[in-house]
Image 1 (cartoon, rainbow, N blue to C red):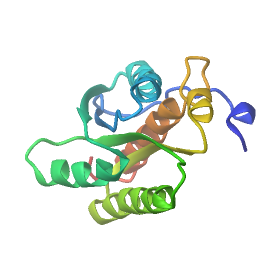
Image 2: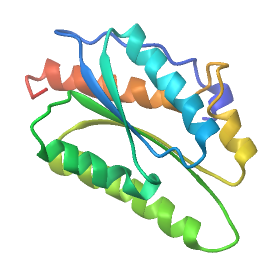
Image 3: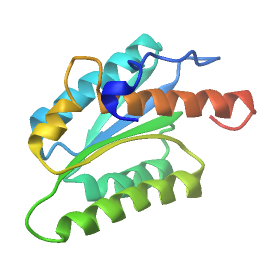
Image 4: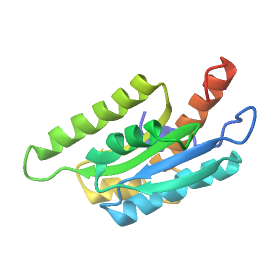
Amino acid sequence: MSSADAPLPTAPAVPGAPPSVLVVRAPYYRDIIDGMTWGATRILGEAGARHEILDVAGSFELAQAIAIVVRGPQRFDGFVALGCIVRGGTDHYDHICRETMAGLMQVALHHGIALGSGVLTVHSIEQAAARSGRDGFNKGAEAAVASLLQIAAARRFAVAP
């Protein structure tokens, strides 16, 4: 399903106390990530969630930062990872895409965290812009929905958070 065919993201109901979510973002492509952040924070606001934002150098560092935070004393109910990887003229793109996504999944599974992934892997900035705008079809918003749904599932089955 393409973004154009998908329903517009809306905030799911999350039972219990307002969730606390950390949005970890790699603002290498500032305009793209700012657009995705707008989408994510809009959904989190609709859900009544509290959120903080943490910036990292690049998409490759998203999983590392989440792993560091999970080990620390501050607790979050969920996480949203936002990044953008644009294909260039070398195979660096393939390596970064693969390892970024594998790293996020590894951290999520290892720590049992609620994680919504909003990492764009695109061939052009135009493709990224089409997925980060304020028209409703926003991958940051979709990542926030995914995180909130995971938080709701954890609460439903009495698993922290």
